[in-house]
Length: 474
Length: 162
Image (tube, rainbow over all chains, first blue to last red; front, top):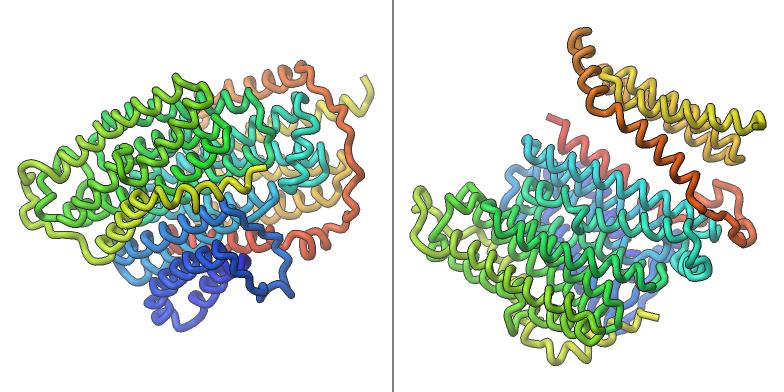
């Protein structure tokens, strides 16, 4: 069941790029929708304990593994890829362009699926790079100055992160002679006080923090998110950077790098600074997508903060917030895609009064921003609550207070965004604006429905879904 | 000071100088030559560190294949005039002359740190045949590398075809 999640998208790419190009160009979108839906169904079957023989087992030994954390990430990837394809269908003009975009989304899908299923540091590096290469090209896809600048910033910082990770892997290989998570984990525990091992853990962490866009390594993120085409922004902000940076950080912190106080203190500090810097920077933005990018930095801070807390409850909160963030941030970027496509701008000073013209976008945007700000009973409220409770229980009162107060800041800047874009008097030149097409509105509706459902079903989910997630923690 | 240490220092310094030349020079062709020289020095270092397979890959892929690809791409670009090249070179040196100095100082500082290398290393991996490692033991990495190549091809089509 696991290897098809990696090999089917690869097979799809190969088949779609065979002859009968014009037919294949039309089929690509449907193949993408089918693949992402199949991934969601496969995750449900895996979660229910369904096991089937691996059809590729005779030819490949991929060494993939799946626990509850993997299932959460595979679900998020399936959902976000589905919505990216729906938005791309609507916003990327021309069969050829759309076909190129879909191919890159499939490549990113393989990279992300591989990243969450593998159990080896070197393979992790390779699949993070697969996602990164697809991301560079997706950011530069429009080929204008902003897009190339955003892609260039990402390439430079990502290459720095790559060097750091490779150096760390080579040190671990020197120490243990193996790069599997299990062997690396035992070596890190055995040589915990050694400066070289501390250096290896430190630079790997820095590499992942760069990939995840955590302050002070966030320089590339606003430029990349805002310059990318609307559909690519959904993929990047929703899941791509979360998988290569934040998921990998959660996995390595819990399974490989020994849980120690200095590491946790660094994560707590980085998380708190990210929350505040992201929130304050978001307030000052006039561009819709840049505001969402800074908001993303702030929300990722909550995940890092919970990771630094280190208790089982905090890790559950981090994973739950990672899932929620991938959904509500994707939704906000889908809404920005709707506004950009229909009005031709993301400058909030030129927007206003779109609520009556775009009722679906307006309603789903409200759901997304209320969830982001942690307003009950939406999904974002519960994950933030778990994180704050975990911090408080662990005696980290100052960090818990920062987490709560930053939610008020989040509410402030997102309310400002909602007011500037959707409420008030209709801005000049927007009289003919209509609701976005069915691709964008259906993507927004799916994501909004998930945000509301997860929030309402939380009391049931806490015991039956969230507590079992922690089973992967040793 | 033994001859080995002197040789290591010479190789290290030449590697830094070649790498610095690669990024400082204004002409793309000279930059590629600098990259190839860097790769050749790295190859010698790898041979000396008893990693002949890594050295052969470095020499054939980085110094050979990648340089050939770069040169074929550069042949499609327009050459800078001597004045433009001199201007760019001057600008680059004035901006980045401190970088190699920082690099060397960082190296000296790292050398001074009390880093111990007294690990109890486990038994060496039993598999030393690189063909077996690539084709039989690391299928997942092979899939990843194929996908990266595909991504590169899609990138060229998406960004440069028109």
